[in-house]
Length: 505
Ligand code: AMP
Image (cartoon, rainbow, N blue to C red; front, side, top):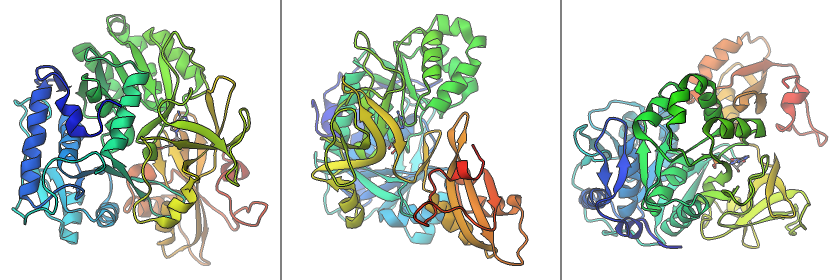
């Protein structure tokens, strides 16, 4: 592994080479990015924030979110949050994080600022300027006391914390050290054979591990460039391709499908494109979509298997001349991968069981959650909650899921969190949220609800109730009102398979 901390990674790259770029902006060089990180360090230390203090960030997607991720991580622990969250959700996350400060765009009055004010968390305002290089920002805040640990981050400091949807009602905190994220970035750079000549078009949100490590840090660890867009827009994608000439992009399968649907009217741009590869991760890529992408872009499409707890990449299909096997997620690509039974025995090749991993990219463990850690680590192996098997060449097939999360086009939703919100409605006696099949998203959120006697409630009213407390992507698209919820063989409600039992596919 070439680097064990983000400051070391930034230091290693050629000063005059471009690090960050964005549509319609002037690029930022590695030297400028290093200066950005040092200015951020000085500002945060002045606000009383130092190493391993958690700094929440609720920012629009773009080059400043990318530079803020690496810059904040050089001085403290970066905790990027989804700007689509409602105030209640943000209050939960910020309180759970014990955030020392929250970075928001200057002058903003939002759910995030309201949540921080309610919790008494100091706001740090980010000032940006369109004429400055992509990723430039200044921070404004009130001076704080001397931070307990000032100065640049060390390799075993926590660089990044993200929440992960779990089987528990509320998401768990995943701390990732500088060593973890740098190992993962190097693994991805190695798999994709990234060089300083590469230009990644990032369309992924920069509050999720895929964009943060799969696109941004992997590129920076190879001295390459990242073009930061405001997020995925199928209508603007080909315009960006034409203007910015990326050599690769990474996305979730639903985005690839949306891109394909607009490809026929962008044939000229595709003919002139310099794409060297296309990467897919975070949800299963149907082999038909992979084949159509390869036909369209005339370059290899590599599917990778990632997870927050692994700082993203675990397995990946290799680039030619090694074979890609559609329908598999490829061989281990960084950590070791094995398959384990319920009792914790490692299984022979070909046998189906729980996918387990170990390696330098894997989190040291969930924060303040000994119960989850006891369940998730067996003999030093981390249990992914995914079910799969390895073929004779070591290629992994994900065949199912043992954990309860719903994978809505790559966005993970904890069904219990939705149950809790539905149960807050005075008319709801029982609620069970589950994933139902969806042709584009893979899975969509559905809920089965039993109403209290005498209650009259429409699906629309209950969805509106949920939408006031949950970000849009978590609101059940389908709510069934039942008098009984089907039980599994043990008499317990089983979310997995419930959609089929209820005739939802
Ligand atoms: P996240 O922590 O959001 O990255 O979600 C991790 C989960 O996404 C994994 O545990 C898998 O269930 C799922 N996942 C990621 N990549 C793939 C893939 N290529 N195929 C199938 N499932 C995937």
